[in-house]
Amino acid sequence: MTSFPELGSPSPVPWTTTAAVWRALLALAVVFVMLATTGWTAVRSHKAVGDVRTTTLKEWLHGSIAGHPLPAPTAAPDVMARFFGSLSGAQRTRLADRYPLVVGNLNGAPVTLRYRANRIALDQARAAEKRRTTESGLSPVGHREASRRMHRFASLMAGDRQILSFDPTGSGRVAEVVGDLDKADRISVVVPGVDTNVLTFEKTQRSFTAPVGMAHSLYDAERKAATDTRTAVIAWADYTSPAGVGMDAATGKLAAEGALRLRALVQALPGASPVSLFCHSYGSVVCGVAAREMSPRVTDVAVAGSPGMRAEHVSELRSSARVWAMRDPDDWIQGVPHLEVGGLGHGADPVSAGFGARVLSARGAQGHTGYFEPGTTSLANFAGIAVGAPAEVSCARAGSGCADDLA
Image 1 (spheres, one colour):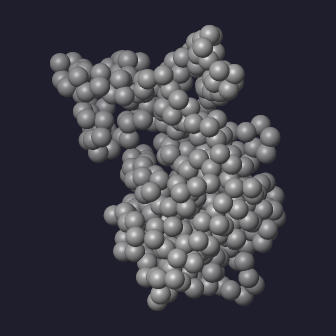
Image 2: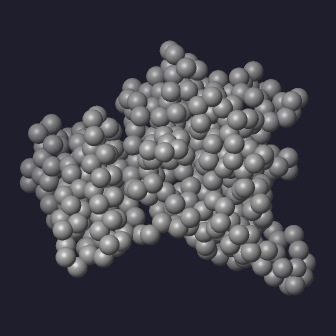
Image 3: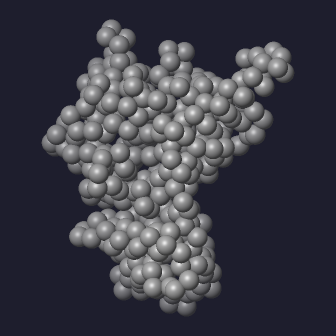
């Protein structure tokens, strides 16, 4: 069985014969292939001409400011915070302008400085894609993708958008803040699932199925739920998600890698405000892995449309956070076998009674991607958790008492 340190001990296999195990593996493979026609679609990955961020990182490692070497980009957030705190405003700006792809992704750097750096990085990436559209040897598909990326980067620069992280390498990673992160009383992080990249980060049609739309919808619902609570929501697509159906979606490798990045994000958040994670689809696998050894700032982890959290019971998450789960009756994810064998699958169904999560109503969600639609009970439940009023949520089953002990 493939294992990762973040996952804890492998779950026991509830079969006693080799034949039974192979039948289960075959069932998993068949179901995941079938899902290719229902919910997970492949996105062609971008083949970048050189890795600009790698080049910039090398320059940073050999750089200095006021005669002092720059800290390693992997330094702990508190180390990075002290470094930037020792600099003048002009020195911080100089670093952001010179190394935007580094500073914009440094956990521990001031968030407003990261916004500035990422705006510069986006402008540079936009210009690079614009040049690619004029290359004579570019295929029609390549031209179309370069044009789409150019327009996406321009969109992310529009107005006063607050881009917390950005990396154009490959299919790209990005995170955006809605609200004032420095002054927030409570912080929410939206963790999306399969096929999330810079091109799918926001959508014009069906906007609430994409990370940006999810974050804005949750932020608006939070403000209605608690007008006197200052909130901030992060649309967090700063991990490499599976591209379409396949082994990456059926295993926990990318979730383990994403979990490390999610933990680092939470560790670096400014202030001491409580944090809630709202995890959709494969994003719930990331959150399940991240819950182990997660900062105690995280008070709640809520999953929707989950294929599993790499655990058989909520206790295996080893987290002090409350764990919530919901699923719409029409969500195709219920067809995924909720088990884990030989590294395939993601464990028990989070909405099952045996898992032990607090099961919420998802009324109005309509399918796999509707959980953040305005006016739904699913969104109202998320908002209640986010603003620190979990006792006000609606449970999936009347009388189940999913929030009785929180009143």
